[in-house]
Each structure stands twice: as structure tokens, then as C-alpha cells.
Length: 255
Image (tube, rainbow, N blue to C red; front, side, top):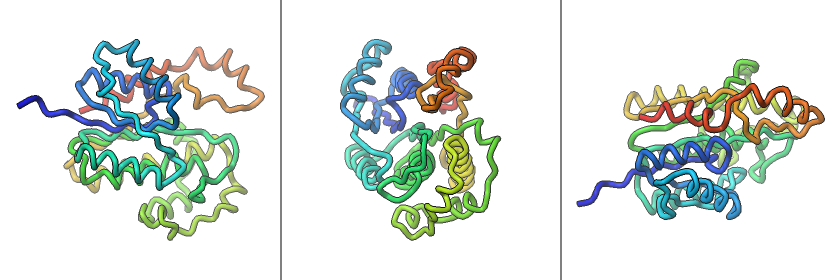
């Protein structure tokens, strides 16, 4: 009998850090399932891996078109992975956005809240019975500048399936009044960090559950689409981590 294949699902794989995370996982002998927003993003990722990883083979990387602004799309992704593989060794929730302005997803939640927190939580709960070894959530040092307010407490304690199915009392207009693109990004990551701790307590050592903070990394996510972007590129980007070094801070948590 041949060696049993090892499977991982990694979100945010087409971004700057995500590509290097995928390279590292291929070096560890894993077959990857990767949500991709478009065929163009998929091909860019494949070209990178073909160039950078001697272990890359097309059949070791399975890209599945998925939209994290749609719970239905996330459900379809998870159902496909489970139908084709049955189990995963690793789930890595790495996808994140900084929404430049307040906008609701088709599901009715603010974009960064859904993509950065609700979807990782939903995907983890859907896949949890099939994960055999580890969950890694990419958290952020920016959580130190925001507080865990009443809204955070309410949504963190609500059942994720109630949230997804519209049984949570989310006040979008109230959220709009207090929206700030950096503040809401940070708060979504604070919620993800909280979920990581809750999940670790729930699994009681049955799984490795880690929150990995890469630090401030030079990726497209830090482009704010503001007048000061050009100044930040000159004075700020040279001082922060490369995507490769940021990815190394994530993959050091691999068990």
C-alpha cells in the first residue's frame, strides 16, 4: 500500500503570504485544497508554485472557486472537500480583507466582519468533525488597539449557524454609524482570536488549535486606498516583513 495522502485546506492562498504558506505545505508532503476567487488568481498561484517549488505538481493543488462574501459558496466548498477527501489534516484560515468603506455582503453582514471572522468560524464548524490534526487561524497584532465591546460579546456567544441562517439580530445601520476601515479590520481579528481560544477549550486537546500572528507584512491588504498610500510606500513598507518572512511566522506553528 502507498503512503496515505495528507490534505490541507488553506484560505487566502493567492495573496502574498498565502503563496509562501502553500510552498511550505507542499514541502511537507501535503495536497492542498485552495479557495480561489477567479481562474486568473488560480493561474497566478500555479505559476508562482511552479517557479518556486520543485515539489509542485498540478494534481497536488486543487483550486476551488469560492466567494467568502457568500455563505452558500463556503458551504459548497466544504461539501466538495468532504465529498472528495473525507478528512483534512489541517485547516488554515488565512484569508482577510480591510474593507475601505462600509458595504454589506449579499448575506447582509459588513464585508470585513464576514470574510475575516464569520466565514473562518463557519468553515471551521462545518469541517471540524473531519479535521484530524490542526486548525490555524491567522490573527493580528492590530487587536491591541480595539476593545471587546458589547457587540463582540453578543456575536461571539451566538451560534454560528444562527448567524449564517439570519437568526442573529445584526444591526447594520448601527454598524455603519461607527464603521472605521482599520478599526473594523482589527475588531474582526479580535473576534477571530477569541474564537481560537474558545475552540481550543472545546476540543480539549483533541486537536492542535493555534492563533498565528505574522506581524505587519508587506502585502496588498495594507494598501488603504487613501491619499497617504504613496507616502506609506516610501516610509513604511521598507520597515515591515516580506510576505515570505510573514508566512514563516505562520508555518512555524505547524505540528
